[in-house]
Image (cartoon, rainbow, N blue to C red; front, side, top):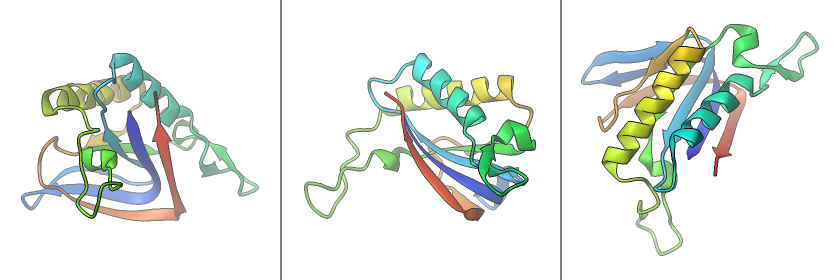
Length: 146
């Protein structure tokens, strides 16, 4: 499972001019399932997101998690994280899970996150989305879970 995590001051997802998910301070997480991914990978991702210490403590050091600061999670599906550009200028997305599997695993990540954390927003799987964010730091961290 691939994820791109951004520490944000705020973020929202818009589909067809309506806000489908938003948070204040917290983590914006773009998620891409790969063909070999399982429910265990979804659990591993949620566990990592809730424990990832990328928020500042009193000394300004990255020592606090999204749980510690009471921040939100905004989780957005993004199959383009699996883009392979080694073969030319047009990306290949064969590294992404097929749509049915990708949807199921994305929804599993959402279910697990909502069961473990009180503030979880989401994008809309397969939709054309506009994502608005204020990256805090900026802090952007890629995660690869295998």
